[in-house]
Length: 49
Image (cartoon, rainbow, N blue to C red; front, side, top):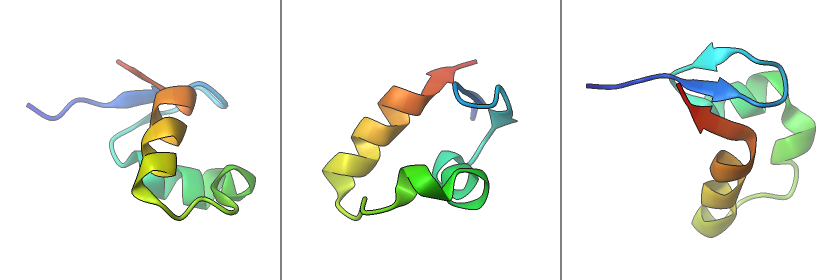
């Protein structure tokens, strides 16, 4: 039911994409606060696995 997504930056398979970005790639999260920008980040840096 809940799949994992693959990070395009490091190749990790993750379930919680925003937590992964804030923990492993904080430079990507800098300045992104709105929901629209979060959706764009997820589409840009993750692919369905």
